[in-house]
Image (cartoon, rainbow, N blue to C red; front, side, top):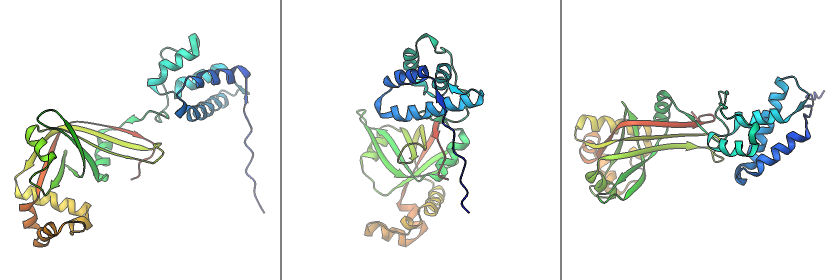
Length: 256
């Protein structure tokens, strides 16, 4: 026997509410207009149901826009709505708004950095030219570590000229509806302590086992790897970013 789910009753909209929706949506950038209409429609119908009303009115649409519009777009919204819009509305929902993420706590940032494997290091040359490069990293003890085999390179020259750097790591779904993003400012230095270098290499090997075993490396690097832990600690350069400030932003569910 087939069981049919109950049909959802359609919500009636007052003509004025539809006109208001159309007027405001016309001022919203086209690439997010469809999403805005869906979100505001759903919010308007939710508020109507909670109030026990039979149809969506203009006041409900105004309230839905105030609750669900990203903060940077609120001035545009209030201009379109005219004098009837609240000038001091503050969203009272726990979930992030549809186009604006929410701040990450320190614990959430550290959890993300412990999971994510690829970041981007931003440095500046002596003449102030910025340079950003992706790299694999390890976050441990409030610092970010990465390894480097070469003695030369733009990244190395920049660090020698200016030890102040910026580090960024992020993850997102292809539709951008879920994401995590962390930005850290700090000072970078090369580790000279063999024990620290060996420890960081051990931890990196746990995170990247195939890479640590030699996969994808040139023959000279594979030779160093084959010599073992001590040879690696001597030959590989380990850099530590001491974090001075760190912020993060999140939206939707995390993948971990």
